[in-house]
Image 1 (cartoon, rainbow, N blue to C red):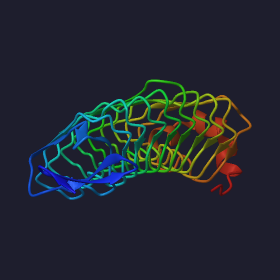
Image 2: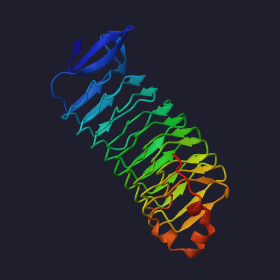
Image 3: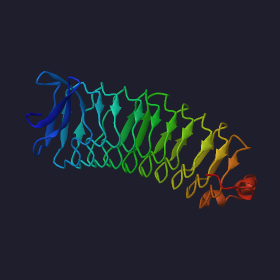
Image 4: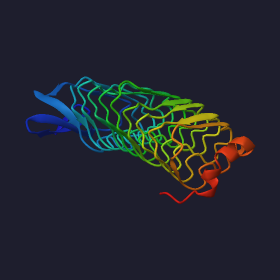
Amino acid sequence: MENTNLRWEILDDNAVITGANGENRELTIPREIDGFKVVSIKSEAFIEDTMLETVLIYADLIEIGDYAFAFCENLRKINLPPSIKILGDAVFEGCIALENLSLPPKLDKISKALFEECASITSIEIPANVTVIEPRAFEFCFNLRHVIFLGNSVEAIENGAFFLCRRLEEFIMPDSVVRTGKEILLGCRKLRHVQLSRNLKRIETGLLARCRELKKITIPKSVETICNGAFAECTSLEDFELENPDVEVGVKIFDNCQQLLANAEFVSRMKRFFESATSIR
C-alpha cells in the first residue's frame, strides 16, 4: 500500500513501513497512516538508498528491521525515538556520513554490525539496559573517539566489536562484563587508556593487539587466562601489571611489544610467560 512518498503494509492492525517511492533526500515517518499506528520499519526497507540524507521519525516505533538503512551512504541524520526496543542487525552498516545519534534507552543489545563502517560517528553512549554488544557492532568506525557506558549491565562484548576504531582514545569496560570475544579492540591505535572489567575471566586472542599508543595495562585479579597474541604489536606498552600471578598464558602475547621486551627487569620478572607459554585458543 502507498501513502505520499512511503510504502507500507498492514500487519496485526498496525502499519509497517516497507520503503519509499522515488528519490527522496528527506523522509518523514508519521505516527499514523490512514488511521493505522506505525510501529516498525521492515528489514531492508531503505537499503542502498544513496539519495537519502535525513529521516525524521515521529512514530512510536518498536522495531527497525535488519539492514533497514544499510549502505545509505549520504544519510547524515536520523532520530531514534525512545520507544524503540529492537534495532536489527546491520541497520546502519555502511552509512559513512551518519553523524552522532542517541540510542533508545529500551535497547537490551547492540546488534551485529549495527554501525559497521559508520566512519563519521565520533561518540556513542551505550544505554543502561544493554547486556550484550554483538560482533562487529562498531567495526571500522574510524573516527569513533569516545564510548560511554551509561550503566553497569553489559555482560558480553563479542568478536571485533570495536575492531579498527583507529581514533578511539579511552575504553572503560564496566565491571559487569564477564566475557569478551576475540579482537574486540584490535587496531585501536590511538587508544591510550584501558580499564578492564574486574570480573573478566579471560583475555581473548588479540584483545588489544596493535594498540600502538597504549602504554599501561593492568590485568585484574579475576583474569585466569590470557590468550594468544593478546597484546601483540602494542609497541609503546611499557607498564604491565598482573594482579593474578598464577594466570595461564598463551603464545606471543607480547609479540613485537618493543618497549616491554627491551626492559630486562620485566623480561626476568615475566620469565615464566616466555618459557612455559602454550597455545590457548
